[in-house]
Structure formats: C-alpha cells, structure tokens
Amino acid sequence: MEPASSSAEITRLLQAWGGGDPAALENLTPLVYAEMRRMAARYMRRENPGNTLQATALVHEAYLRLVDIAEVRWQDRAHFFAVAAQTMRRILVDSARARGSGKRGGGALHVNLNESIDAMPDRPSELVALDEALDALAKLDPRKAKVIEMRFFGGLTVQETAEVLKVSPETVMRDWKMARAWLMRELAAPGNP
Image 1 (cartoon, rainbow, N blue to C red):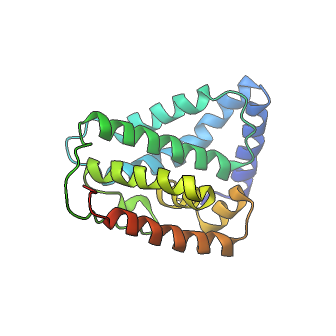
Image 2: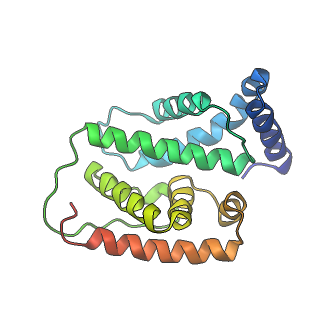
C-alpha cells in the first residue's frame, strides 16, 4: 500500500488530468506505473507459459487505453486502479478469445475465487468463462460484479473497494461473499468449459 501522501498526490494529479491538465498526466505516470506493473504481474503469473502477452505489454496496453478515455472525473487513486483493473481484464479476455480458446464442451469448470489475482484461471477458456459469468452477474447486480472485479482482478482492499463504490466495508464483504458463491455456482453449471 502506498503512503497517504503518495495517494493524495495521485488523487490530485488524477483530478488535474481529468480537468484537462496535460502536465498532470506526465507527473502521474511514474506514480502509477509501479502499481500497474504489480497488477499486471499478478495477472500474468497464472497465464499459460508461452503466452505472447507479457506483463509490461499488458501495462502499456492498459495505460494507452486509460489515456484515451475522455472526460473522466477521477475520484481518487482507488477509482483509477479499479478502472485499470477492468481495462486489464478486458485485454486479457480479448487475448484469450483471440487465441481460439472459446471452444465449449461438457463438464464443470473449477475457478478458485480467492481474494487475489493469484487464483487467475490457468487456461484461457476458464478466463473467458469467468468473464462471461461476471458479465451475467453484472446484469443481475452491477455492484456485486464491480466488487469481484476490483478485489479479484484489481487486488484492491475491502476499504479501497468501499471507497470507490461509496458503500461500507461490511457491504463490500457481504457482496464479495454472495458474488463468489453465485459465480462458483454459474461456473460449475454443465456446459461450461
């Protein structure tokens, strides 16, 4: 976790950048790069060997997409990293789909949803199935899907997730438990890879 002064500086720069200050982006980059690199490394740790997408490339692709987002009103550091997590998720899922991993078959899928990206599914088809289940959850309960995305994919703490979603940490934990149970049931259903 970053010191409070660094977090406050990141928030200040994000807000200035969102307000149109291009110099703020230049000053922000070195402050967020290391954390984005750690996030990407957690993602990539569980990817198949030989995957052509590397952590550095994931960070750069996510960063380019984040820079292209127009007129975002960044709330704070946690908000930025939540969006970064969502962006990295999209890149990895797109990459998994591009590798032809969308084939469907019988049997149940086992995806361990612990509290970090260290439990990222080993096979691209599992990542695609998790993404599809998370999209289905988002249609039923968008907040619970965001909690999973921020905690599992982004590695945000309960407190950071609560701040971004503007709910209590207790609500985050309740959503986390219910969403994990729902996702595990969905992923275990016949027809998942």
